[in-house]
Amino acid sequence: MRTTRSSGKKETEPVSSSIQDIPGKDDSTTPKSSRKRKISEAEIKPEPVTPKRTTTKSTPKSSTKSTKSTKSSKPTTASDLSAGAKMADAWIESRDAQAAESPTKKAERAKANPYGLSPGQSPYPSYPHPTPEECWDVHDRLSKIHGTVKAPKTVPIPSLNSSGCGEVPSVLDALIRTRLSAATNNENSSRAFRGLVNKFGIIKEGIGKGSVDWNKVRTADQKDVFEAIKSGGLADVKSRDIKKILQMVYEENQARKEELKQEETPPETSDAAAPIDAGAEVSKAEDNVISLDHLHSMDSDTAFNKLVGYPGVGPKTASCVLLFCMQRPSFAVDTHVFRLTRWLGWTPSDAEVKRMAKDVKSANPSPIKDKRVKKESGDTDVDVKLEDGEAPASVTPKRAKGPPPVTRNSTYSHLDVMIPDDLKYPLHYLFIKHGKFCPHCSAKKDAKIRAEWGDKPCPIKELKVGKTASKKKKVKTEAKTEGVEDDDDEDALSGGNETEPEEEDSVASL
Image (cartoon, rainbow, N blue to C red; front, side, top):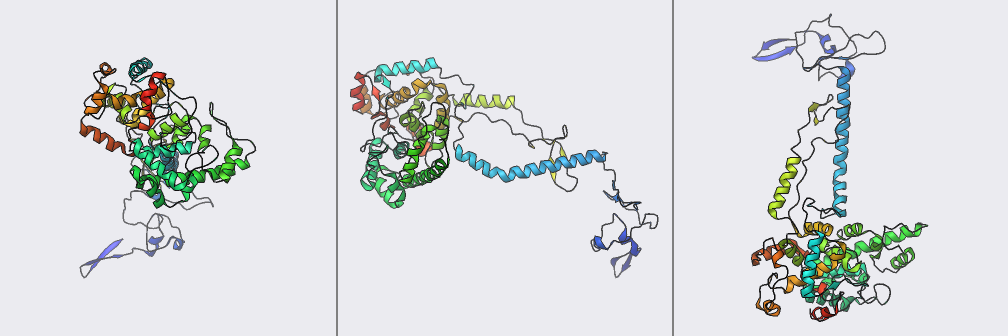
């Protein structure tokens, strides 16, 4: 190319019209289809150009064309470059596929386990407390003061006067009642439950006999549900949750009905779970009797994850349904249980959690970034390690996470693993009762509690290793952070417990 000056402006003139046909030259004004004649470098000697990358095509001697790439700054063979490009293509395809599926998979995982708990696994696996011996020691000490507590052999018939905390035969009934009891006391939740009974009536036959007709609640307007339960507090939130739960369960019942009709044999159940009565379940669905009794055919972990998937249902509510209604060993953690187990050192202190996190980081240092390889056919940089001809599963491995802060949910996850199954029911009951009536352990420091307790010493005082100060500000903060899952669990003490004779008076008085 040569340039001429005209009127102070540079003008570019072609040296030869045939230069447009030189292979390797990029002329955006001339389409590739117009390059009909191929010429060799001997015919034309253009001004020297140092391209970053060129490709020289020789005149083919046969119908098969051969292409050679010029050397790059880092020498490599054509086979290596081809293999690297294939690997990069495979990695990008895998990455794009994961990115496309990730939101759905995350949503499914979150729906199945919204609280991030791992049933059967403690979030603090290196923390050794409580041991079975420590659990029995506390149980025996509290039993001497509050009486011996035993789980009932049968679930009592539902009460129309008290909402309860799940101690009814119907799983759905237990779930809604426990949802009503959240963030309030037994008196308020029972008043709200009686409002539902008066507004929508009761079922007169079947396993839900004597309780609310939940299908009428499902089909009713939310305003009507709100009016029925407004005396119990948080009626706006609870009415929405109840309506959503009932609609979800109804749709599940109808879907299961169609599946059971098509199956020749009933589906298998887990070990120690109740068998599925397909005929009864189909009949209920056809009669629009909403039910969650098929959860009895699931193992405890599956049933727990199913329950926490419903709106407004947290680990404590799900655990109460398992413990009181389904009679499965589950250690529900309410505000009293959480406070006392923290004092006893049954969960790690904040300092110990930080130390565990440091240990995890020390054992899992920050990952080193993989080599950066540029894809041959484009400008996309991808992180890929070329080892054994395969692309890595992930670009940059994530650092292992340390244990979570101690909360009521993580406490449940830890203690449900550590406490022996045969102590979960009595310890839950005893912790609640002691947390309410011991002036040394109660969050309420009033004269009435102290007067009723008298001069008796606290039976677990010498076992406390955590912080025993219970400032009002701290208690309010705890209740606020736990949200609708926080309640006094008075209902857990008001019935459904089989006790020794000396306990009958104290239980009846609660």
